[in-house]
Length: 155
Picture 1 (cartoon, rainbow, N blue to C red):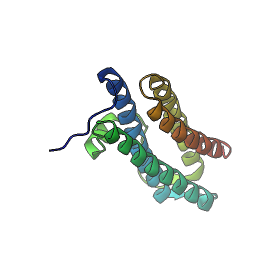
Picture 2: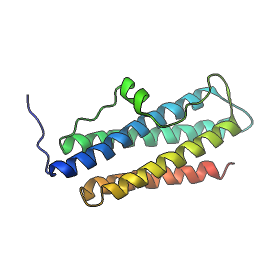
Picture 3: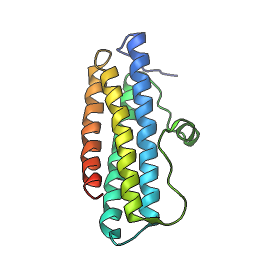
Picture 4: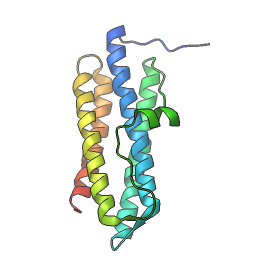
């Protein structure tokens, strides 16, 4: 079986691999939480919030693919299995059933803020060991921050 040899030192690979895996779990669960809210949304602002949630899902899905592919490129196997995401997520889960639009906006605003904080920690952690990964994380964080602003403006 072929394996990808990392261009990074063992220590740099460990730090970078952990940052990428954490980002992957965050982005996978963000896409799931946003889609769950999208399906169960109700309220006066249904259409706007419904469509906005799809933007978050698209961002999260694109980001998770970029993060996972970066991990493989440096010799780290990404783990996006459902059990791994369920066991490692730090994202608070939504209630089951219909969800009022104002509660969804508040919840998504909070979730995005939490994810952004973790991304900023990962950005700092990858500064020295892998600036290429850091650049990827910065780009995703910028998109997450834009979505956070747009949701926060609705509260």
